[in-house]
Image (tube, rainbow, N blue to C red):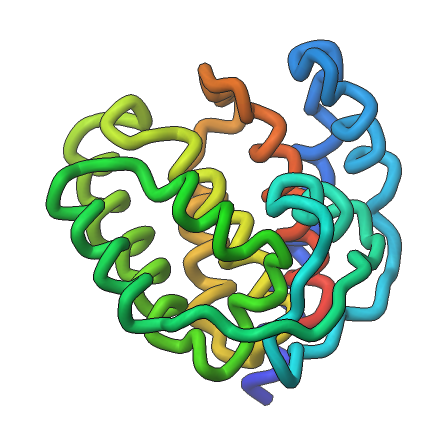
Length: 212
């Protein structure tokens, strides 16, 4: 019964998200306009990726990998050594205390974004979820979207959306649901990475589709 109720709610939300995606204007995204058009045209059924059994490396970068995943494409990768978790977590905590962006730190570690779902990355997943649902959420609710770094927010949402396609932990889908309701429908982030909004919506639809 719980699964049926979730499925019904997800189906309604999925229709709504697809409508919002249709309102995206590729011309607002400069050289990434073709990608945004691809997101609009690519919301089809797809098989979710498997959780990596070991750390994987790719020759590409995080942003390119996210674009591919948002379009339902695979990202080639090969096994490699997993970087330490605790020292990286300390870097994230230090950046948070100093109010510095996470964008470059997370982008470098998750060149292959599916690595976020590797079991050993649990502490980092929890940190990311906490930042979204406590720190960023509080600043936005007390102020406005301008109270947070748009690049950081969008990258975190994209990474959470990738993980949400590979987990049954509903907290991650709930975070995506919350921000979908919070972000103004007409919001166009004033950032060089505004296309990450379209990327997040594309990944969000894929995460929703797994619960129908």
